[in-house]
Image 1 (cartoon, rainbow, N blue to C red):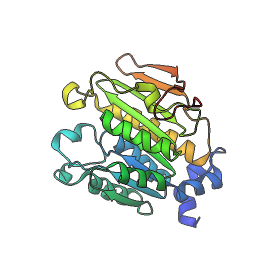
Image 2: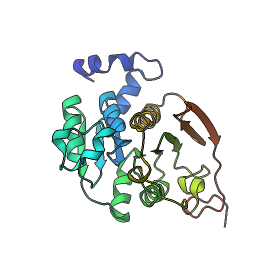
Image 3: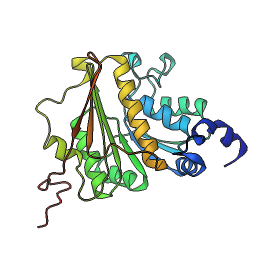
Image 4: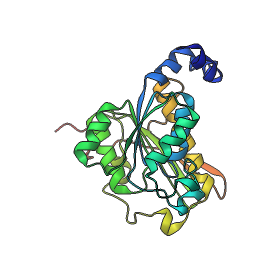
Length: 249
């Protein structure tokens, strides 16, 4: 770690739970972010600022005017650009030492598995169950930790799946899917809510990568922003889960 890095990350290095070793772990880390929208924006910004060495940015959407109310990594000038390019440009301005790899296409199962296998950690910042289930399957298959977040209206949730046998996975939580795959475009979302949830996702990612604190393994954190109330639910592995089932055959 050079002098500039020691200065840039000094306030984080001062934390006993992080220190030099934890900061070096962040610099050496390779993290896959699925989705550069409302959740992915604060995730990418904070991970880059905190010193994560390599971010793989995966999103095939373009920046639209309606995104700018909550997707804070993008600007008006970026309308029409691929979200991954817009995000990478913002990250370069913030921390040019953070390396970005942009995946501006939909990832099929093979491509997704390849990227998950190369990552130390995956953050699911997508907005649909199809993607979330695919990401979960790949993370379980490669025993890759997954930080999962979701937000809609004034509600949000976040949890961490270890990717290890015996722990719950996303499929244990939602089964084969919800009755309604709700979207922000149909139901609306309060702008700061995605920022709150995305910031918690980023915090959990930094903890996992540096070894600091206690991750949200087996716990689902729920936010009702209108009442500003938090709840925590315990998650248990489903022994009959077709993705991570721990029951012996």
